[in-house]
Amino acid sequence: MRVYSEDRVRRLRMVLRIVVGIGVFVAILALLTFAAGGHRAAGVAAVVVAGLLIGSSATALRLLPEAERPAKIASIATGVLCMLAGVISGSWVAFLLLLVGLGLVFLALIPDEPEGVA
Image (cartoon, rainbow, N blue to C red; front, side, top):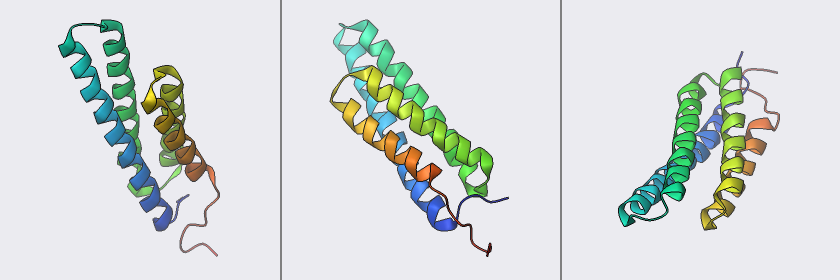
């Protein structure tokens, strides 16, 4: 049974792609941290955050075309991971991660009438 309309799927897909972009950006920052030679612990933390963001959002994007319950669960989990990564990172990217994660959770949880249901 579909839990999202096509409009909601389109909006969720857009936000999840933004999360993938942030994850790629964090991965690039981690590579630059490793290349600089210092702060190895920060580089490892950034790689873990980037992996979690990219992995969870890619899973949600893969499940989203069916717009069923697993897609909703994956979208909520990705939003929560974004917020947790924002709290953990403690950098200027943290504010962006918190905002995107909160928006994703609200977008995934707001009730929606799928098309064709009266």
